[in-house]
Image (cartoon, rainbow, N blue to C red):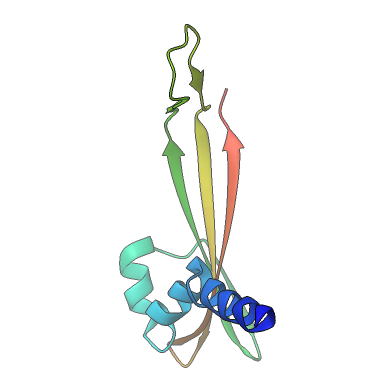
Length: 109
């Protein structure tokens, strides 16, 4: 019974991930659908298995106060962060066949 619950939980986690939702949204669609949202690709590689496009999206995330559920004189505040998202897209004959997302966070001073 425990193994069945573990397997079901694992399947749910895999199917609900952001990577899986990207795959569902863009795989099988033309590259122009992604370009309309992310703009021009940052880098393009031509390989035998298909063209690889790398898109880059940069966001500045503001600092926010962390709620501690009590009154304090010195509130805890998260730092400002620069979030860089790299989308690696494999395209064969103008159709997206694979997409991967890598996110990096860099603390601003």
